[in-house]
Length: 115
Image (tube, rainbow, N blue to C red; front, side, top):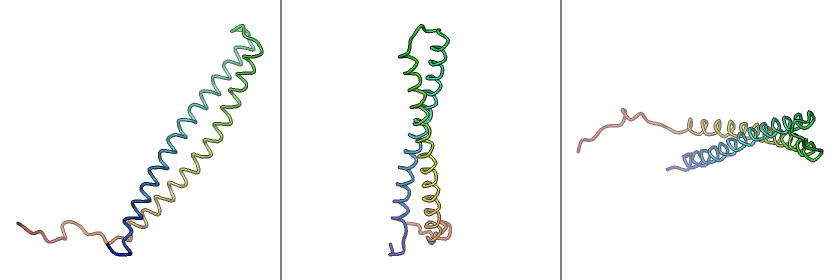
C-alpha cells in the first residue's frame, strides 16, 4: 500500500458512519417515546380535567410535566437527529471522494493463471 492509498481512511470513515447510524437510530427511538409521552400526558390531562379518573391536582400536574418533558425531549432529539444525518452525509461524501481516488481494476482485466 502506498502513502496515497486511502483505504485506512475509508475504513475509519465507515466506522464513523456506523457509529453515527447507531446514534441516529437511538434518536429515532427517543423521538417515538417523546411523542408517546406527549400523547399520554395530554390524554391523562384531558381525562383529569373532565373528571373521568377521579384524580386530583397531583395527576394534573404530573400530566402537564409529562407533556412538557416530552416536548423538550422531542425537540432535543430532533435537533440531534438532524445534526447526525448531516454528519452522515458529509462522511459519505468524503468516503465517495476517497473511493474515487483509488485506482480500481476490473477483475476481468487481470490475467488469469491456471495452476
